[in-house]
Length: 290
Image 1 (tube, rainbow, N blue to C red):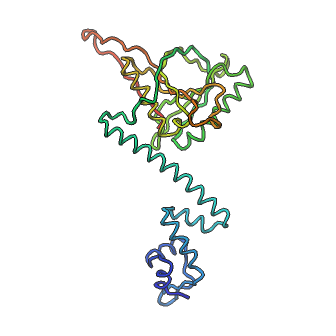
Image 2 (cartoon, rainbow, N blue to C red; image 1 turned 180 degrees about the vertical axis):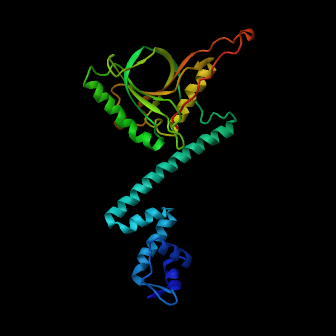
Image 3 (cartoon, rainbow, N blue to C red; image 1 turned 120 degrees about the vertical axis):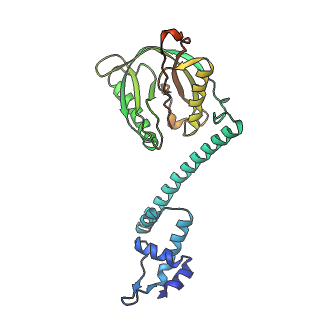
């Protein structure tokens, strides 16, 4: 049996940490004296203590540390791998955001990453009838929902007359860690029951690759299209969209393959109103994924 001081020295944990881990149920002493409350540990507990040390140095949350310690070895290894995969994705997102912020600060434009990689064009979109599914989602849920809903809508359309155009997603509001849209997935079909009419309009758009589809890289494409509309003297006429061309399989696409168009409905700006005519005009809101 080892005193708490000796166990702390050999495990590389402080007595304060050992008391905390005892309260959390991660590493209880083998014996607690009923009179003086002295704690003693078995030498066989040292491997567990050192495992906790390593996990905390890896910044693994204490709640997950407890799950890993309680799980059988293969399950514990899977829990650790899943945590690290999520952590790497988060670090990659943070790195890309810092790159965008640094580019913005260095350029002094506030525009984030340069738009040179994006070629923006215009096109006419005819009237369409669509079946839709609309949800309030935050960013993490959106990543899971999007592939499923697009397949679900395509299957529903296939059981009837089939798709008559490209599926697309409308962002009626911001989607990020603090805002939840709403987001509306749409599949064009022949007019009928349970369809919604999409009016004909013009839109500015740019194609993005599989690599650029990831958050936050995709934000640069949204910025490029919105800035192009302003520079062209036009007005954003509705919420932004992601248009997914028929026949494109995102899951099997190479990083450099074009898999999606980022679009904004747009219209020519109205001439400045005559001051004598009274107040007029409206502002179009920008709703962007992320």
